[in-house]
Every structure is written in structure tokens, then in C-alpha cells.
Amino acid sequence: MIWLCFTLVLSFTSVISDQNIDSSHIRVFPGKDQSVAGVFQVSDLNYLNQPQYSYNVSDARSLCLSLGVNIASKAQVQEALTRGLETCRYGWIDEHLAVVPRVKAIPNCGQNKTGLVTWRVDVKKKLDVFCFDESEATTQSKDATTDSPSDRTDFSGHTQSSSRAASSSPTSHSTSSSILSSSSSTPTIDYRAEPAPFVGGSQSSAGAKAILITSTCGLFLIAIIILAFIKLRRSRAVSTDIKQAEEYIQTVEWTSEEKTEKTEEAAQEDERMEDERMEDERMEDERIEDERIEDERIEVEENAS
Image 1 (cartoon, rainbow, N blue to C red):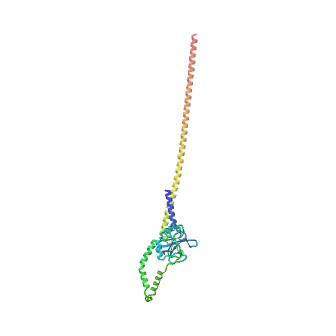
Image 2 (image 1 turned 120 degrees about the vertical axis):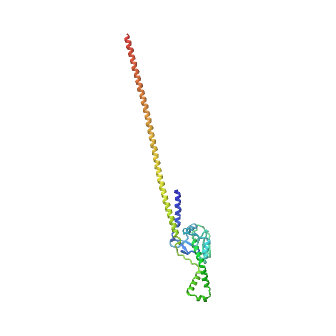
Image 3 (image 1 turned 180 degrees about the vertical axis):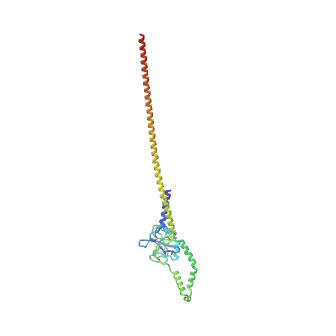
């Protein structure tokens, strides 16, 4: 029972270590609530608040789980790339590959390649990690489905003749230009540190529950140890008392036997002395009898003469 509780304590301690992530030392890109197709990149920050590679494959997977999401797969990062996700830092994905999504070719990013640039490297290599939030991906997918008819209308309206565009109101022209600009441009890389958007809410609740369970289990373990210690002390005390009682009984028995032996010896001695006394008395009686008989014989002889 003690070992079971000890194992539970270790397990919940591990859970707490995963839940309690210092959000001031990680960066989420593109930013808070700005994942692309549910995919976002997490980097560790050094003391200068600059991103640094810090996670091997195992650490990367645990980090995503601690944020309440899963590590992204290659297909999920590829989908995010088609929707404009672009970074300049390698991150781990579910297939134990390091990838960097590139929209534009830059010499110092992704080997000057475009697309999903992969790098097969040792799983102990420390990099960033791509995480996938399924709920956010679903929300973005629903929003895209809802907005698609209006997007097509705005786009067709923008491609009308210049005379119709000129007759449009300034507000409509501004809106059309804004939509065209947003549809033709790609996200720029923002290296500003963003706190993790997922550490809180249900995660904090889960962490609190884990702390409560661990504390309860720890108290239970301490109580079991105390009870076991008290029981051990009592068993030792009982064992000592039993031993002392056995020694006392043995002493009493030995004393009783010794007294019995002495009593028997004394009785035998008394009996022997009584026998000797009786023998002395018998011999004395015989002597007296002999003397009497001798006196009578002498007296008879004298009378006869």
C-alpha cells in the first residue's frame, strides 16, 4: 500500500511538472490565438528573451501536451504552410522530423528552399516544436466556410471594370483594397515573445486538481508511514514485554523449582534425622532392657546363693 501511494505521488508530481510551465520563458508564434490551421510554433527563451533551441523529441511532445494540445503532424504543418504559415526556425513534428515551413526562399532560412523543408536529425537534437490545437483548427475551418461566399463576392467585385470601381464609394474601395491586400500577402515573421495562450483555464484547473490529489496522496502517505511507525514501535514494545514476561516466568519457575528441591532436601534430611533419633532411642531402650535383665539375673543368682 505504501509503495502504491508512493508511485501515485511520483506520477502526480510528474503531472504537475508538465502542467506548471513558466509562460514567461516560451514564445508562441504566430502569437496568441493566431495559429494557422491550428498550428503554432513554440520556442524557449533565454535570459536575454531571445529564442533558443531547447527541446528534443520527447521534451517537444511533453511541452505540447502540457499546453493542452498535441504535437503537430507533417500533414498538419503542410496545411498550415498552404495557408501562409512561414517561420525561420526548425521545429519537431510527430513523425520525429525537424521541419521549417517556407513560403519565400531566403539564404539563411530553410536552406534557401520553399515549401515544407525537412531535416532528418538525431531525436536528441534540441530544436523548437510545432503544436496543433484541434479545437482552434476546427474553429478556423468553420470561419473559413462561413466567410467564403462573401470573399468570392468581394473578389469578383474587385475585378470589375475600372469605371465601375471608380464609381464605387470610398468605403467600398477601401474595403476591396483591404481584402485584396490580405488575400495576396503572406504573414510576416514576428519574433516578439508571446506568452503561451493555452496555459490557463482548463489547464490551470487540471494543475490545481493534480496538486490537490498529490497533496492528499502525500498526506495519506505520511499518515500511513506514521501509523506503520507507531505499529512497529508497539510491536517492539509488546515483543519486549513478552520477552520480559517470559524471562520473569522462567525466573519464577526456576525459583519455584529451586525452592521445591530445597524443601525436598530438607524433608529428606528431617526424615533421616528422625530415623537416626528413633534408632538411637531403640538402641537406648535395648541397652536399658539389657541392663534390667542383667540386674535381674544377678539378683536371682544372689538370692540363690
